[in-house]
Every structure is written in C-alpha cells, then in structure tokens.
Length: 224
Ligand SMILES: *Cc1c(COP(=O)(O)O)cnc(C)c1O
Image: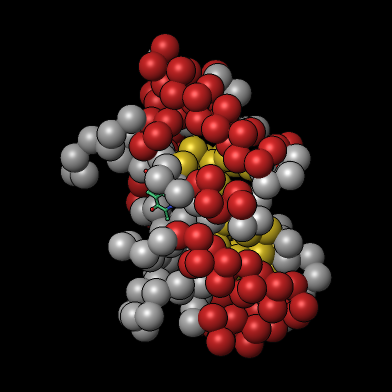
C-alpha cells in the first residue's frame, strides 16, 4: 500500500511538472491507472488513495473485476482491442471505450443500446496497417460514422506511441488527428495518450487523459 501510494504521488508530481512546463493547468489532465493483470485488491487500494479512473485492456478481465467491485464512483476505461461479439459485455462494464477503430465495432457497440457511451477513436500512429487503430487519413470518415451512432458520444482520440520511435513526433501527429476529428465533431476534445515511459511527451502535445500502468502499480504479474 505504501509503495503504491508513494509511486502514485511521485507520478502525480511528474504530471504536474510536465503540465507546468507546457503552460497547462494540471487539473485539466486525467490520470487513468491501468491495472491490467493486477488483482482487484490493488484497485481497492488505489480507490482508497483517491483514484477514480482505472483502465483495463482485456474484456474478460474488465468484466470480472467490474463484477467483483462495488465502487460506484469508479470509472472504468476500456483501452484494449475490442471484439464485436464482446460489445455487450464491454458496454456493461466500461464508462469510456478508448479503442473504437472501425465502423463495425462502433455499430456493434451502438446496437447494444442504453445510456450514451463515451468513446474515443483509436488512431494508428505506426506505418503498419495491421496495428490497432484507424489510419490517420481515415479518422475524419470514421468520426462522421460514429457521430451517426445514436447511443455513442464521440469524445476524442486515443493512441499508443510506436515502439522504437521518438514519441514526440508521434504525439504531434495524434494532435493533428485530434483537430481533424474535432472539425467533424466539436465535442470530441479528449486526447488519450501517454503511458509510463512517455506521459510527459504526451502532456506537451496536448494529452488530456494519460494511461499509466507500471509506473504506479509496479511491475505487472505474469499474465495468466
Ligand atoms: C498497458 C497499457 C498501458 C499502460 O502501460 P504502462 O507502460 O504500464 O504504463 C497504456 N495503454 C494501453 C493501451 C495499455 O495496454
């Protein structure tokens, strides 16, 4: 508990420093703690420390943890690759889905129906077509499609910086995609970017939502 508290405080301090260095107000930045592979007891500890946003990247794990915990003020962010046949389960557990990257996934989430669901478009910042995310030159078209889904609220964009590349230019490309999406849907103001190794760069490039795992949780247990 003490270690987690210390790491959380340390990361929050670095977030505040990076925000100030970028002349941004730290209060406009949401820090999501990615808890994948960690037990629900860690989420309870984090909640006791004031964390209200957690992220998971696998639907089964998201659903199981959401089921086990009764923390009504906790927001669950789904940040992983989503399968259409899991749309209902994802929608039952997640407050925000960061990884909408194709029409058919948006349609599957929309078809479940219910209270409006906040979604982000995942943008592929690599040159490889088969990585998760929509190609940047397809983002405006997908944004228009999602805007037409009655029960989805398009809130912005998300991306993972490519491995082995300076994250800064990648996050700058994401900021341009965010502008293009915002031109289509003015409420789509969120930028989900930045992980343990690169969140300061993401803040400099306008990220509003950071997805930070190991820098706060410690190393992840072996995946089961
Ligand atoms: C695991 C994960 C993170 C957090 O990664 P860390 O390097 O542990 O901070 C962020 N985003 C996504 C999509 C992830 O899968």
